[in-house]
Amino acid sequence: MENMKAIIVEDEAPARDLIKAYLKDYPGIELIRECEDGFSGVKAVSELHPDLIFLDIQMPKLTGFEMLELLDELPEIIFTTAYDEYAIKAFEMNAVDYLMKPFSRERFKQALQKVFDRMEAKKSGNKAVKKLLKEVKTDSKALTKIFVKTGSHIDVVPVEEILHIRAEDDYVEINTRKGKFLKKETMNYLENNLPQDTFLRVHRSSIVNLNEIDKIEKYGKESYLLILKTGERINVSKSRIKSLRNQLGI
Image 1 (spheres, rainbow, N blue to C red):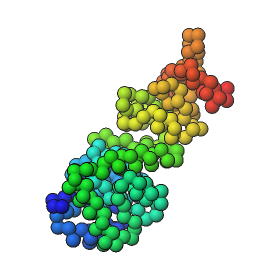
Image 2 (image 1 turned 120 degrees about the vertical axis):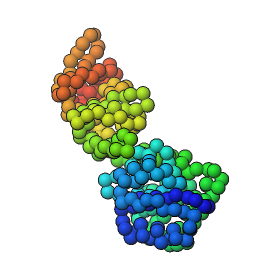
Image 3 (image 1 turned 120 degrees about the horizontal axis):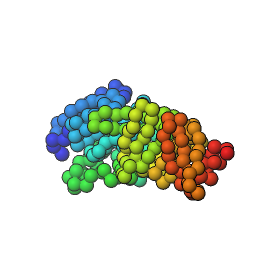
Image 4 (image 1 turned 45 degrees about the vertical axis):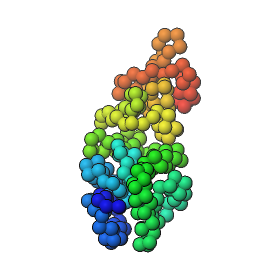
């Protein structure tokens, strides 16, 4: 395979050096950027549109999985990992290749050959990667932070700073005291993965941080409004009022 552009996203210099050393055997692959973290990786992929990423999984602040969620288009991915057994099983099941650190030159060659074969057959591995991301999200623990990409800028929103979340078509609007953030995500995913003792879905289009509730007001015969500490007013659906009262202990 000739004329491929590649990016390395890896926080450990020895691992980057190993990949660069092995890439010398492939003059048709041009290494166009090295990134030490996921934030710079998102920016590089968005700006340079590589054909291939060598992507570490365990990186501080932004993991390899979290980085991929922020990308609009996925190139071919070769993951690198030191120990994540769950990820390895998922890669094998979804035919997404990985390199287990430390990896040999022969193993590196095998991983690249899989990429070459997919590209020659014009069968991108994107569907497998997206399927893997969905499985990882389903298996994940409660969220502690949410990453939001706006252009080339990435905001990190700690969940404890979220006041409430509102559905906006295919997006969600995340409201904090610092501002509002739009992210392409589903309310069902957030309902199931935000900390259950802090967040509650009070309406099909609203999730609320229980710590931010000032009071509940009744209006009409069976309708209720939440008044947040900020003064914002949020509708509570009839089917959710019982769960809300239980959570608040009232």
